[in-house]
Amino acid sequence: MAVKSILHLDLKMILHIPQVQLISNGTVYNHEGLKSATLKHLSHTTFHKIAISSADEAASTTCFYHWHIDAILYELSPPRVIMLYTIHILQGLPQMCHYNDGIGNVLPILLSTTIVILGKMMFDILLCELQSVVVHARVQYTLHPYV
Image (cartoon, rainbow, N blue to C red; front, side, top):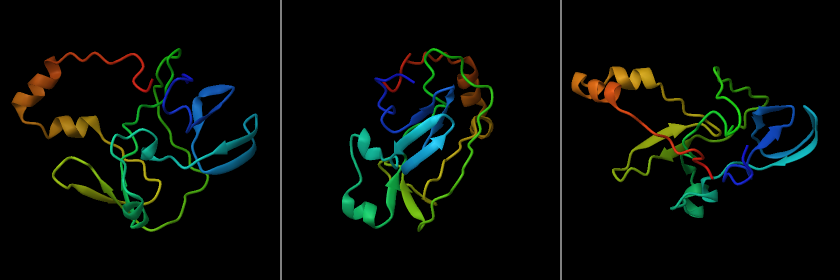
């Protein structure tokens, strides 16, 4: 993972498997070659332009952390398979995740939820004309989106 990445502060890479990263809160000891790693709960306040107020956060309001790509592997090929492996799920009250889309959309979620979006399902619900636009579109991604 690029040291200049804004996500570098929040994730700990397993040294012998750089595609695997630890995400948690607290200190982990003797795990996959790491003698100790201090991890912190991910927060949108690290880099979002507009952060949720402390009062709203105390009232179980949250927002999406970031658009997820499988890993920041600038020098490695992208993975063919994605797997989330959870050792311990945090317990807490449900939260209301705000889309910050200007029209007030919210999604009730549990603490530490990973939202999965299925591209095929999104494509299938498009009108035929828009499916054609998608099929013929060309996208050029930035080389290092989190740097």
